[in-house]
Length: 334
Image (cartoon, rainbow, N blue to C red; front, side, top):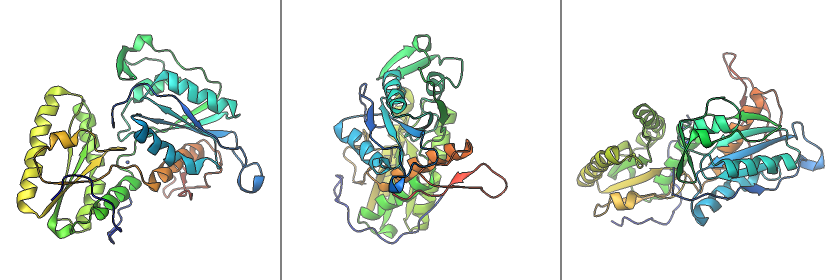
């Protein structure tokens, strides 16, 4: 059994569960994906002064390119800017400025991170949504004091999406796809969903809970054994314990089953998992990107923010959820 990436094959018919930090990279430029303010047919669309700012970790050229590819289908529907580098004030300011130059006055900020807690405090402070700066913040993989940060300049209305990709219906469906395209028989396969993890114990448990929807979908799809785990990548003591636990789990599944799938619960790439699992038998898959459902998730989360603010945008209409909850978007079509 090879522990390299296997080429995708036709997806197997599995149950779809509808219920989402990657490679290290330095400061990244903000990239504007051009989009006209008109809706289909050249007629100005309601809410045409709305736009989306997507935040993502950033990495190498392939990592960044996959994010750009996910945004491309939104180009002819609404202005979109991308700010890479976690919560980097320079790239965020450039992305806000690019949207303002397009006439955007209301910005939905969608954070393409697995955990909604990732970089949330500094993001809220930089966007002027809270007055207290964080104690510390990562800026391009450099830790700085929150006293060094200043709110960004923006005259527009900011609508922040606080949820991350983890736990979304799209996340579960993508990982079911990843397992299916690995080409192994579910009944003969154990699965480990493996995430970056968080330093705070409570936040790490929340990440693990968010992974359970995908795990249940895989169990329903007939996989013999499915586990979730976090590597706690950036926290030395916690990482050492996690590595021992993860290696023991993969080795044990390899003894019990013909195949072991390791599916990265991360935005893109396999991260450091190959080094952690060196010498063990397993089949590796891709993370969430590339996959068209990431585009759907971004459109859905942006639409939810616009709908809650009473706006109609080219991304799709709003529907009122049962029980009098806030409006939620109809799934956007590419």
